Image (cartoon, rainbow, N blue to C red):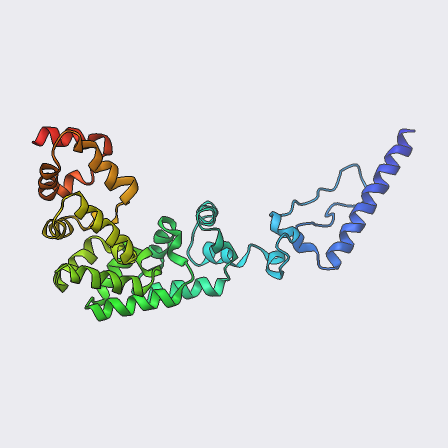
Length: 289
């Protein structure tokens, strides 16, 4: 009986290996299967190679899927030397990138190279901010053109790309509207350049949001001169949320000091008080007045 069972098992193994040989002959070897390399006789059991990844089974149903990773993943792995873990993190933060073609990603890299940024820095920037490869060339190119018209040299633009790449994926119209709004307050071009260097994100905001914060500060008791002074000292203040930061920040100490004293205090110490922890707002004022 044992001899019959062994023969039946061997026959099943032989049929399995023959089936795999047919698959390989038909071109399915890239799925990760392999025909038996051992002789078809003997007690040893032929091993089946595991598929290399879920994409090998045609999850996305594309030709490139059967050849290896998706275009975007392969490009990031090979061209920018990212690790699989880093690529996975980029895709988690920015899922749309996984559906991009290698050619569109290559265009974004070439744009950065054209600004003099080397691939090692492109990789670092992408890890820190996956929005780097947002596919909006018209916004990107429009912002570069506006910055050049504004008087920035290539080196200054490169610094902005390194520090605040998200600015280049906002509308040029926003930047122009913000510049007009700040100019209307009495700030000259030199002051605007200083704000652009210290708080470039302001030029990505809509002017209506800036106007809302300006109006609220006026209602609290700040004069136009006070507000302009605040902007000169701490331009990033205008990038703070009105409802989540500015209003509750001013409400805490308002119960302890008059609005006039609070305005004077903030105007002279904006660079520290406006950015301290919310829980420390009242204590800082009490210890200073």
